[in-house]
Length: 285
Image (cartoon, rainbow, N blue to C red; front, side):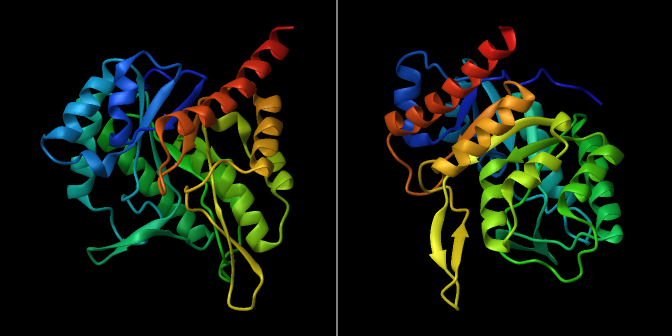
């Protein structure tokens, strides 16, 4: 199994085709770009032409959304083969997927669905990650989910579940701090307590993103992880807390809905970079 070069410990953003001309027009102070693997599983065309040009200039993170790591059913071998072709073609510095399931009996759902944290699902998730890492010939990062309900069948705390999966498989972790905040607010827990118990030594990448404030059927507040807004002040605060403990880590700003112009997205990355730079200076002092 190969261990690809790490992403730079700098701020990056998700690549959007509408930003391509702005990005290519001049060198950008961006550490890396992330793309969703499923958008590049075709053979060619403009998506690959753009990504090829981007890859020549910047480090790359490939993020999967369709493997259904948390499903109790077998992984889709055809999907895994397509994913391998994308990774072999672009040799990203990082590949990551979600702790979730999104398919059943060959039907793909447009969502990342929760799974119960039990010994049975822990064993199955670990088996799936082992299969993915063996097929790709590289380590992967596992991302913590955003959640809206607690599953009654769960018997293992989420942090303990994630830590044990990483221990068994050797996979790294992708810590999505917006997901932590959204889940904590929806389920009445404390995001700081979650982060303080998270296995930060296994974290190789961080995600930041925006969320939408809504209400459930009873009128109670409900946060939706929609990646359609700037990073919230509370999430920036949690991010500073994490980086103060870990030191600089590759940090991605996600913005997938109501996508702004390049300057607005770039400004979010610069805000993350300011925090990373301050942490690097503090550790060197």
